[in-house]
Image (cartoon, rainbow, N blue to C red; front, top):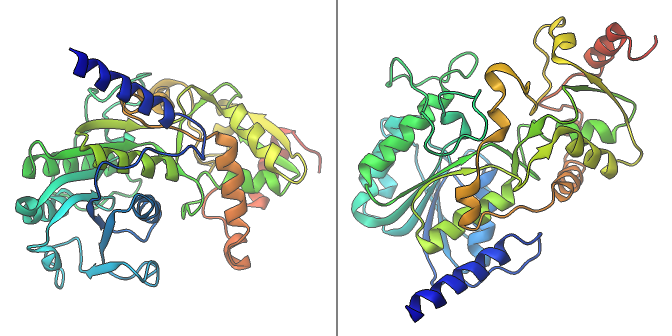
Length: 369
């Protein structure tokens, strides 16, 4: 019994440390791992590389060599394609031994099944990055990992669909493909919106950047609507922690620990701006008159999307998922964006154009011509 008590106290102390703000020193990994990252040069991949290297793990990348091929020149890189039927496919992985594989670029179950089955005899742990979109319903608040998964009529389809309607069900099938190939060796991570420096989508970035530009800003919904995002660096920390402890299971990796209100997030954006912008709130009913508007991250806190930004993250938090303050993510994202080439900064990949925003604000009577 004494041994069990010491183990419990040690685990409790580690959990407390993990929940501190950014800058808290993480406990030393119990042993050095040989790590394979499928992908590794996009958004989450580089964050995983940085955490792994900081912990002394040996990292190998497998990808097509098309996305930022010059990144991490010091790492071993294997080239191929996730589709085993394209070119050399996944042949470069045959016979290679790794303690853990991070799969953050598996979108179709055939691809995930192929890589997992090929490596099954030679790997100890497979960590698959799924999505909170894997669930069948988004109207239920505080749903946990046991919630019903999305399904698709044709499980062999290999297209996301015009509106990405197949995305969630395909992610669920990818989870199942990995678990079938590697029973008892899979961890499934289900993030919500992954945000922070390096985000190529601009879905979150739009808000700190738009508000930093000042003037009159169109904002959907109400200030008390819930929002869930996770900083890419916090997600990477948690995933590497799962690898180090060989934690198995399925985990919603959404943040923060406590409910984040939409108005609070935008207030942090305003606090990071050179001077405050003027926020003009518009209800869902008001915005419906203008048809589909590209106002990212937010979804209506009602009806079929009422539960979307409320997924339960208790299981992940209990195992060490921690979150830096959202204000830090906002400031770091804004600072990163200002380092990009001018032409990239001029073309946000999400959000309203200046002309469309002004058109809507004028029509709603929020500003004068």
